[in-house]
Length: 102
Image (cartoon, rainbow, N blue to C red):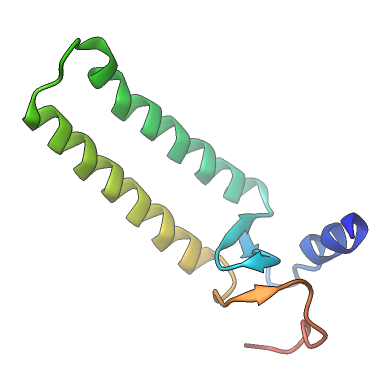
């Protein structure tokens, strides 16, 4: 199964940054650009949480801004994945018609 997964990831003639997950709905980074986007996303989440950690009891405004920035970061990540990745769809394993255009 692991070899099939590696073959699936390497089969990337359109040079997508993200390919569909094999199980479920969503994307997996397959090129360095995709991994870079994920690293930036994680870094933004960490930077976003630092002000909350430094306070013993954050205010309602700080919590609100935390959630706004987190939701915005997730929305931007989904947008980038959608633009630079395969068309998302539900799948459960490697399909027989994987070579077919969607």
